[in-house]
Length: 235
Image (tube, rainbow, N blue to C red; front, side, top):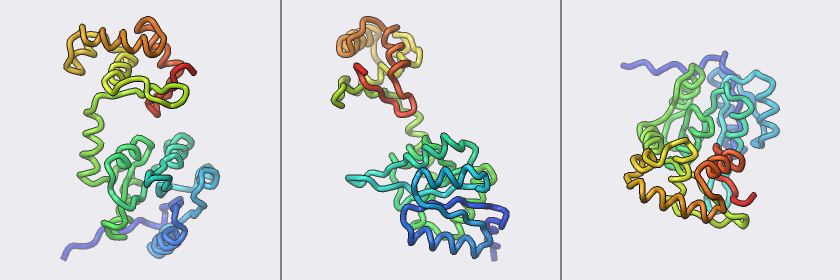
């Protein structure tokens, strides 16, 4: 008979902020029963930052907030990561979603966990692994992340009223030029000819009201938001 892995020791303090109060209470009670110190707080940025700034938490466990049309907001996770980048963070999800997985890792998560698909014992193992400096993710979640790394980057360019100014291919050209790639290297990256890349650049210049690639790079630097990969044209 194989021994079950040990649950987290009492030395681990977990900041717990679940967007569903009932679920948060159940998780807190179960973790405390395992000897884990739970630091509960309301699921809002101010409360989470207040508890985190006290420096008593070893791991933060958060859940995403649902917004309109079924989308999930990771702003709380992102804000906490900017404020306390050294604090390991776990995102508790209701279901596995490719975009959510990629954005969660980009926002600072070190572990992703779906309670509906796993046991509470596995959740305890997730906390301990992240606490010890590891990453907790399924093979499918890691595949999502690797696929996103292999994709050509793109920077969205929006008009003052929020409309898209560039095509998807033009956005890729902007991203690569802003990263310092020459026309030749941009062409190699996208599988195009240099002549085609130049044609794309001329169209981009015309749409943004600039005249050369130097102005394009400066525009991206001064008007861009690299973390969100988007900037507002004409701002």
